[in-house]
Length: 409
Image 1 (tube, helix red, strand yellow):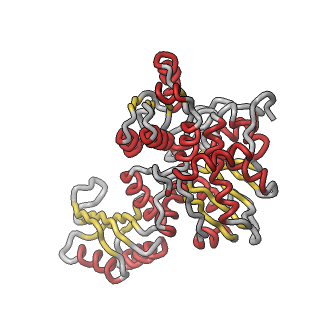
Image 2: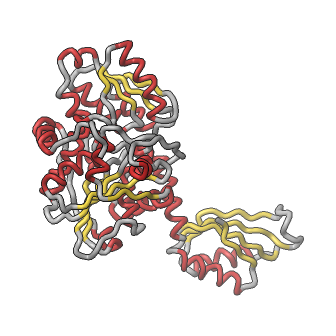
């Protein structure tokens, strides 16, 4: 454990719960039968995406604001955030009539930027990461006497996030494992502190994006380390370095932290959309990704609670993820077919698709391909099918008729 750093207590989290209880949602924690069937044990989903601003950040930001002095409230608050903390802080500051400035990355999702501005905050976009934004935050704190409400490296914020843990223990008293997305470490610090105080045998498993593995590398190094990040769909947990206040909690209380890839996160978002009818952002789906991919050790007697930390995802991104998920399952496929340039052959190809029970979504018919011999024609089709095996059957039927067919990635 890192010496000399203050540690959160369960009493701090209980006080935060009493303080914020009237203004945050006691989110549900229903059982997920599809996910449990995949995992081989009972799995519940703590639906923090149901908070008023769409993420767990409502809890920590409000707790911090409620303990500020009158002078601090009058001067105003500031934060650097990719979106969820920004929205929560802006909403609660507006409700409490405090001036609020938010510094956001230039690549922050549009919906998060728009929602933050709509709450009345002054929004300044600069840099590509939260760390870049903190340079401006530090300057404005000094120039305008603003109070920093850090997205994760603050004991009051951590205490607020930890209040969900008491709800989990009440909603699912038989819980054996809690899976927590990890960015800067504020949520897992609060959750682990509360849980280990009440039920020390419950495992706390953190999940990070491979593109931003700050916690994993810090735990290996024995201290917070700076990491360079790659682009990630899990922007809510894209942090260059875990906090110096959160790290001791991670080190002392987390049982493990695992990594998930971009493709695994995308599959988890798609799974939640299709099987649970839940729109969850990349960061919020990280824990589900770890469960789906078998990266968390469980047995049939376990009861797992997976925290869905947020649902603020751009709808354009959702559309792309749906297409990608359908493509991966083979329910969308592109076929390139070469046939003789004679009347009836196009009808023959589409007829096979129809007879096999698939649907043609788009088709192009051309003689202009340089690699097609004279007397033949290329047909490019995008089809909707029942899955990968169905596509293979269609391809086989077309080849039986003598056509050259390739599936296009």
